[in-house]
Image (cartoon, rainbow, N blue to C red; front, side, top):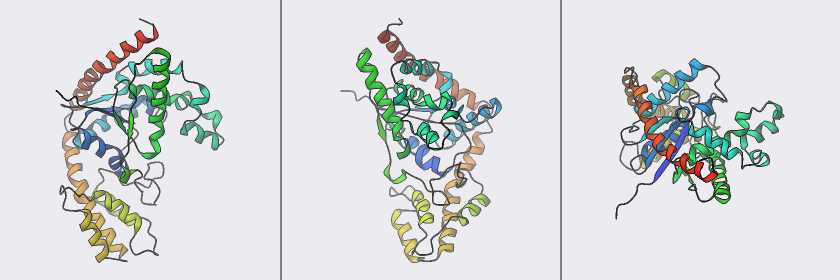
Length: 326
């Protein structure tokens, strides 16, 4: 019997240069799983319109994300990298979902509740309020078995599942219910101040950072002198360690280094700097080389659009029949 490969889908907004948090919380999962699953990687440029409202910047950042994926080893021959806006099926399905899901339900979304808590309810755009329905469409069009997300994004999958269940109940069995895939050890990647690594906090280390940025950022990591090891330094360092022999830095080796240098915070930061340089350097060089090809982004996105449309178009035809518009 032929085993059918399961499907994985996830998206990322083109909102700027990726940092280590983006890599360990998103890119690495997608790259590691791409050989086990049929993988859809979506550049969520329509979602990004909630943050970026400059055409030139949007085009530039979208191009950069494609190059990032390629530099990190995403296989576009085997898998599918595509741009959300290239497929009108996403917005069409989002509208259909709008007609069956209620306003009170959408008010549960974290982004909306956060705005209310800050007294900015009247400033919320429809794009921000309604994004769970577009996100549900993004996911459900491709019938994924799992969707990699951080712990703080688990609600996105819950919204997609609820929407699928409601649609199936109203119009008949149409959508598969996806499962969230969360790697426990990278639920939250710490920034240099100990909070979640985030561009908005300015506490990040860029994924393709130059050596001088690595040195500057690591030396600025906040430490607590009451402990035997600098926990924020260790938390970032541990993300680089492996158990599969793919790097010289194993978990056991890392533990040994921290035991041998107990209390020597500056030295441990210097060791982290060197290990980050070894990790980032080859990625940065590969990215620079890929970026020299002026046609590669257009080629990848055109191929991705056609492959994604074959799947999304088929599902959308099924949806249209289910709701009675064809």
